[in-house]
Structures are given as structure tokens and as C-alpha cells.
Length: 310
Image (cartoon, rainbow, N blue to C red):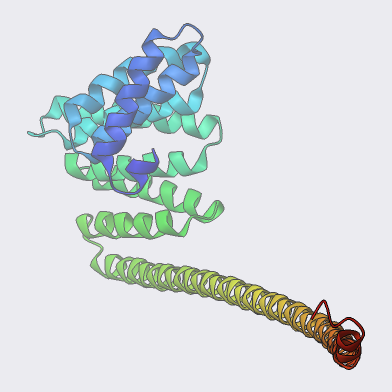
């Protein structure tokens, strides 16, 4: 039904036919549900102007609606039948009489069970049918009934249609001045309805624009938040990297200073060891020199004392 309401009757018809096939195989389906689906199919075919199919499904919807005791559904069935009989070509007297009979039956049911919008639509259809038959007085009565019900509810769209139908009836009766006056009233009401619809459409467009603007602003704010979060994360990563670099640099500097200190200590130890060795060598050299000098001094005396051994 959503597809039909959005002017895609063919797509809606495909979905409803699928639902009808599934419903036929289901066990727990109430008569009201079955009749309602058949009426929806008739509505779709009415939009597509396939009047034979409208009659077929409307007639099939009548027994379930009667079994369920649904007066609205029965009235819609009779209304469909009456409107289709009035639309079928050629306009034979038998078809037009059937149209009047069905529409009057629908009007009676809908009035008795207080369905004003459907009853007003039936009264307007009856006025159009009486005008096709050539009964302007009956058309005037049906239009006046539709006008009264439209003003009681109120339903300005139906009121404009009722004023237009009443204007045609007055013109057919020869009341030209009254017909012109009613036609002006209908035209003024239609203009006001058009202005109201236009204002509503503009308001809906404004609401849609505001919603779109708010959505874009929300997306921009979310993007800005994500950007700031990413920048903060990047800054934290940079600070972490700098901290790690400074820590590694400080550790390397401490390690280098420690190595230098250890090297200086080692050099000092080596220097001291070399100095001790130098002193020791000097001492050894001095003693050797002393020993050699003593030996050289003592050697000639021993030669003089022991000439045989020279």
C-alpha cells in the first residue's frame, strides 16, 4: 500500500499479489484480513484503471467482509462496483442503473455505521453518476448531501468537490447565476487548499532542509572531534617519542661518561704501573751497575792474589 500511495501502483500490486498467494496457503487468516487484502488489490487495479480486475477482486472481497461483519469493507466493495460500472464504456442504462444501486447501497451502509469520509466520497460518486444518467435534480441532492457531510466533519477537499458537483447540477438545471457563484466558491476553496498544501510542502521542505543541515553539522562536529582526537594522539605519540629519545640519549651519555671514567681510571692505573716498573728498572739497573762496578773493582785484586790462575 505504501508503493501505491507513492504512485508506484505496479510495484504495490506485485507485493500484494505475493501477499495474496502467501495468505492463500496460510491456515490462520481471518475473513477481515482476507477481504482487506482483496480490497487493496481492487484499489491497486483502480489506480491502474483495470476495471475488470477491480470488479473481480471487489466481488471476491464481499463474502469475507459479510462474514466478518465489516460494514466499512462492504461499503467499499459496493462503492468500487458502482464507480466501475459508471466508468465502463459504453454507458449503457443497465450499467448506470447498477452503478446507482451499488453506490446508494454503499452510502447507506457507510452512513449507518458512521464512516463520514467514505460516505462523502460515495455521495460525490452518486452525484456524478446521476449527472451521467441525466438526472440533475438527483445529482443536486447527492451533491448537497456530500457538501453537508464535508462541512460537518470537516473535509475541505471533499467540500470543494461537492461545491463543484453542485455547480454542475445547478448549471444542468438552468440556474446559471447560482452555478457561477458555487463554482467561484469551489475555485476559491481549491485555491486556498492549494496554498495550504503549498505551505505544507514548503514547511516539509524547510523541515527536511533543517534536518539535513543539522545532520551535516553533526557530521562536521563528529569529523572535527575525530580530527582533534587524531591530532592529540599524534601529539602524544610525538611526546612519547621525544621522551624515549631523551631517555635513550641520557642513558647513552651516562654510559659514555662512565666509560670515560673507567678509561681514565684504567689509564691512571697503567701510568702508576708503568712508573713503578720504571722505578723498578732503574733500581735493577742501579744494582746491576753497582754490582758490575764492584765486580770490576774486585777482579784485578783477585788476579794479583792468584797469578797461577790468570
